[in-house]
Length: 179
Image 1 (cartoon, rainbow, N blue to C red):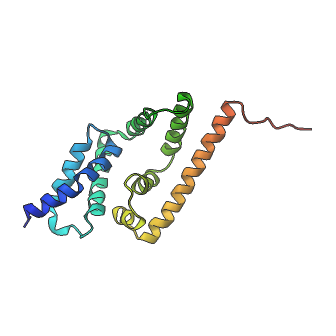
Image 2: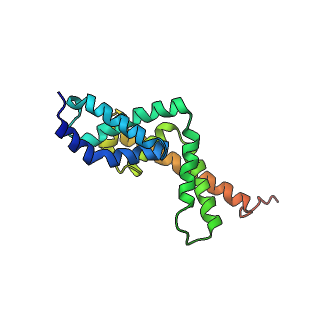
Image 3: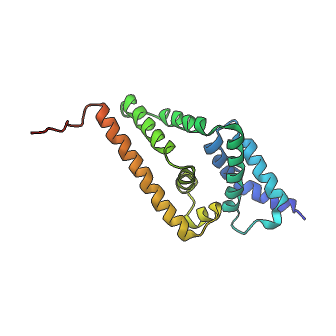
């Protein structure tokens, strides 16, 4: 039997976090719908929610977002939308440099696997610890830690490739001289 007061506390404590999670993945138009669906599941499964509710809610949100993206084919537009947000931040440096940098990060990010992006987002954007991210992803903390290390290494490799490509396009790389 659901307790409306318990649900109200759960909703008040975590709606903002779930909404931000959804926003980062599906954008402003669809995030409220995803968050509402997460809390509809939470209402139906109140007895199944563990004491640490937020990782459980993120796990539910992750599945709802995956279904949403599969059905609407919005994964590519999501990456583009986030890159646009990054380029609208207050500028101190040359605008062209910042846009080029944001585009390079976007390209590097898009070349990561969906699993790598999800794990890095849980740790970086959602500020979850490895143990909490492991619960969201349905694996052990040790496995999550190894996956995180590898995902960070792959992201760094992609960023290094982007940097080398950008230097080459700007003519900063010295041609190989053969004697």
